[in-house]
Length: 495
Image (cartoon, rainbow, N blue to C red; front, side, top):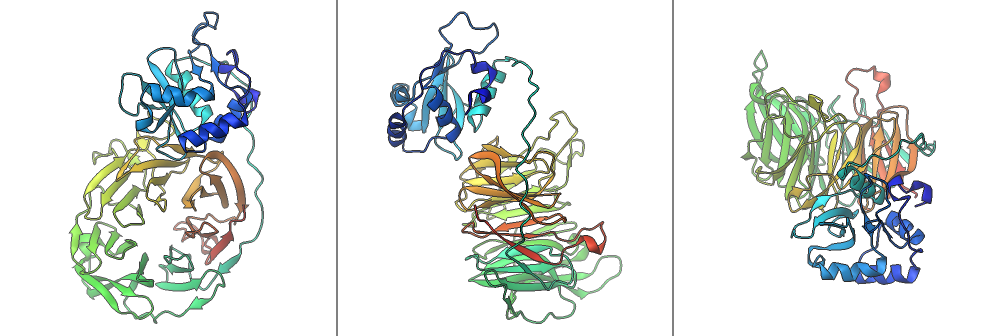
């Protein structure tokens, strides 16, 4: 971190000479983790800083002590922080210690009361955020600055690796095979589904569509075979009261996997289907109700919590233990329907285990932002949720997400559409301006931007190995047909 980037609150601190690489290596070996790069940058410039013992500091400046790195392990042991996976890096000269938490990636900075036995207060996931949190916690106001934010790196106008074509309308859903070698694309218009091999673009034949069967976008895979969800009118009754049949079926043979029956007045037809990775649970969202189905028997598992009469984003953990539901619509604080959540975490039996409330840019506003998408990482220990302004990462302990995000990513002057984890160390987002933006999980600055298309990429997937990204823009409900891309674009992640 250059000297100019150190917040003003540290500019007057007595500083030590920079730490040696040998001490850095020894410390990382003792704690068993790689230290954050921004913290290392500061310590290479000055191995600790301390104003807690000086009476000449400006009035109102918060007291802060950053210990020399060679003292971290000893201080951690002396105050019994190690068993809580905390590393003490400093203190405020009073009742609080400043620690790094080793429980999450990226690491969190925590303020811990010396007399407390818990994890204390979250103070940020970057060194700069931690310093700002120290400043704000003690109500110290930094001098105003006229420095302007740095512009984003220019987008690279390269072409996709390939385009997967053949859809009569926009692509409404994409589902990757467990190996990441194939993708099943679906278009609600014409009830079209096409299976492609990603490396070659080869199209695999699917069973011919039968009349009066309407595909519900997205489903999944069972034993490495693509599975679709369909609806069918059994008895047509005017006024939206027809008897309906929904079913899972093998996309290659058209054999029915399971089926269930209901009345259109109770649910409408399906808007989105999400099959668990193990193929045993299916969530089907409709215009007026949602089904939580046993995908083996077709029986009902649970009734989903209200309010659900709105679009939802859905995601399962890789082990099929938990389901995240995000409310895509803006939540009115006066709607009287429990406005206290934007994301619910359910177990595989439909029982609510956690909820997340997402604050907007203006925390005093009468509404809260919708969640455009939710996504778990492969390990299931991080939950991603994207609003139109930012992507937030919550650490998962079992089924419980951290109350506050452990990391947050933004693209200045952009509205976001979709986001996903890319391998173990990155995430990607798409913007309303048709860009794909790639981040490293330990750095809030973009490392790569593709100008993918002038159209808005509303769908985004990454292969399990993180080497390929897939985008599609879906059907734009209020735009002309020319605003719809009828392809899936495949992008190579080359950084």
